[in-house]
Length: 627
Image 1 (cartoon, helix red, strand yellow):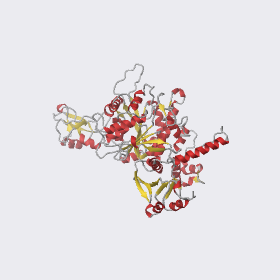
Image 2 (image 1 turned 30 degrees about the vertical axis):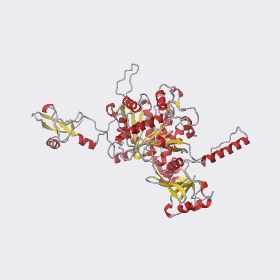
Image 3 (image 1 turned 180 degrees about the horizontal axis):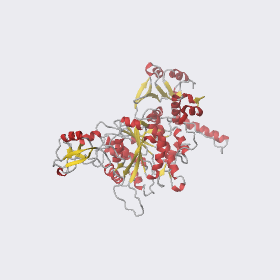
């Protein structure tokens, strides 16, 4: 192949975060680089008093943190394969469901969705000594995933149980969470928000980790949600659990304020007992509350009773409200004055959320379980699902708007997708979701998983949690019970090894030279067959280039002709690229690509489809990348 500097290999890896950090540093402070390397002494000089040289400083660490931090910087070589048959309205919908290890998937999404996401909600596995967490393999993450999801051998679920006896009860959980949250930070827009459900065992550790990744100043608060509507009666417990926490952080609190915080739906009892033409209303005291200060003056009620108190507004404001018939006196005129406020006005203003979310408004686990039973036609398919009312509330206060993206990378039963569909029923509002779920294998011998396993078998799908999630989304779209069908869909993608074959051969020191040479030849033949199979799946290759070139997974794909060759034009709102997957490019295609309309466009093709002369000519006109 010619050594033309303008010819590059097609991207084989996901977005390299380390390169991005170095690029940002070079742009902002080029003086800290010396011979291409970061000079720490120059950084110290540039930052001056902002460098803390003290050996004693506040720091949050744990066993395994160093590996978790490094893991963020390691790009993924995997790909996402479209699964059109498992999707609903694949060509129309912009919602995504991705089956795979969320760490690898988040890495693959970095380039395409960098700072594009408005809201993230996750409900990660709680660290209660029984729940399972992913055991990440930093050296070979894709193989680790394929083994865990049963795609390489028959060992099934290779997740491990993180018990307190392991001595790494908290460390393993934190090591699992850190790189995922760091990658999530990259995906959020500047006015984006992340919500994380958690119980009290890791809430304090999670806060410290979030302070490090997002910044303490960007903590928006902690919601306490009552997940149980009934009162527990357990004689063995001093304090029974009825609530969970939802920790909320902004990417940038100032940017969030500037764009506007969201409001929840109205609460309170509105009625219209006096037939006010302005509609239903409620009221609140005009008298100031205990510990508050206001304006003091006398008010005479309709029955002549005089009230001498401190009030919420001055006397001029009071008289204006009285003339507008916004002041009422309860108890047939003998009660303290109250100010009317109308439903229509509050609906326009919205209602500020508090940090206490009741089960009456935001749902509870039992109600969510009942809803799943109605959707699936049987009980106990999924334990302790979150209610859609809870996620709808989060979507509202995050101020998610039309065409915004909502991400959930611990998708579970698919509540986030269901809640998004419900919110999308509002006029002029249609948010898009990206769900990621590990295909955790279900064990029929485990009494807690048997119902779920048998359900998957009954619908003729592999018995894993990802299949349950997808099936729920399909049934919600189709309609269930009294719920009407929804005019929407979702695209399914699956994490898998790359379509490109990398040289991963390793000599076995326990074998002879002849045996290793033979093994290497076999490896080369396999590589050739995998890279240039007799029949290739063109869409698989197209989507790998889409995600690794940084286009989004909803990019439009058009089949076109370039000269005598079939090619594909891929466009999203910001970028465009052309691919030809024929094994030989015709002279007419070469001529067409050197025309003015293709100037500086990205063109990707097989390396063997071009001669060295063709490559040199094309590289002068297009951004040529070869597979």
